[in-house]
Structure formats: structure tokens, C-alpha cells
Length: 120
Image (cartoon, rainbow, N blue to C red; front, top):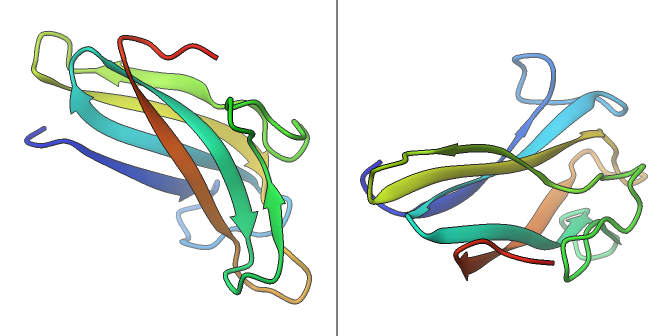
């Protein structure tokens, strides 16, 4: 872990880069941050990529709008104890969905950084 960074991964059950509607799908937010920082995922929105249709998934506090669509993000991994940078992973599993007449789904979330741990 050479430098700080944040990225999102979306993974289905198969090794394919595509998921099908209804397939269990993991959304993972990964961050390499200096030790002593925590994270909280907030303001997640799914959209169709054109700006025509969107669905709010998590509110400004990181709470699910509808847990049947996307449950709360949970800590999955914290690695790198004793080093200056640490990998932190939070995520949730959801049934893949799409908007009518669209073949792709875009997810956009805010990652809040906190000194120490974040509180809701």
C-alpha cells in the first residue's frame, strides 16, 4: 500500500463483468487511508447514466432508504495495523436491478472521512 486512494467495486456471483437482474451482487467501497481515519458511506444513488432516472439508496447519514433494495453498508475488512496506511472495506449485498429500458446501472456514493471512527 503505497498511497491513499478510494474506489468502488461491484461484483456478481460469477466471474463475468456483467450481472443479471436479481443476482446477488456485492457493492464494495475500498479505501487506503492513513492510520487513524475512519470512513462512512453516505448519499448513495443509483441512476441510469442519462440523468433521466435515479433512485436514492442511502441517506446523508448512511442509512438505507429501503433495505430491500440496498441494506446498510457494513465493515468487511480493516488491514494494515502497525503501518502508516490501512485498507478499509465496507460493503453490502443486494439483488441486482436496473431501470426500465436501460441496460446499465450506475452507482454514486459519498465517502465521509473521519478522524478516528465515524458516528451516525
